[in-house]
Length: 217
Image 1 (cartoon, rainbow, N blue to C red):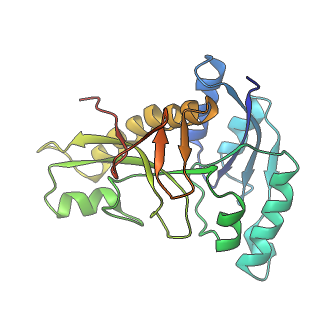
Image 2 (cartoon, rainbow, N blue to C red):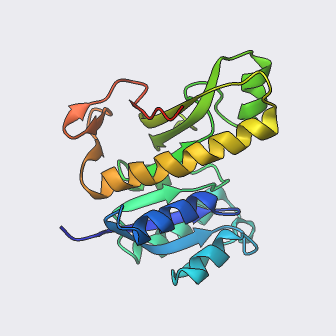
């Protein structure tokens, strides 16, 4: 089986990008990162890509008059690499419906909450404020609904009495670095897919709405 081509989109430090780079280097993932795209030239993730010998693309959203024009420029650049998978790894832009449809069924995102809870920002503090017993992170397929696509993998974590937003964020980040490479591994091995009906399938079996539960504590 030929290794899958992956394009990763980032806006910041790229810690999840690094986790995937490491998983590919170790042989866990039968894929290769063809390029890393950022909307911010100063994103540290671009340095991670450079160190790993991965081509970098910078497309500044501020150079475009509309979100549609920016997304079309991204599509044009991304498609030169003929990617099998698009990975959003801290890409802080809301994507247009056209962009999402163009990569339907082959674009993953990771979100720092147990979706459908706490879409959007400040998820750790929101979980604490709600008195939740658990928090965590979710890998999901991307759809036109923000943070609303079908769930692939979740990593639930017990919230400790001593947790604050910062400590919870650190623990969630560690879980992200476990489940995102795992989702990419499964996708590249043709084990994880999104059906035409919108159901997530793993090894041909439809997963429950909450996705595969990755338990680590």
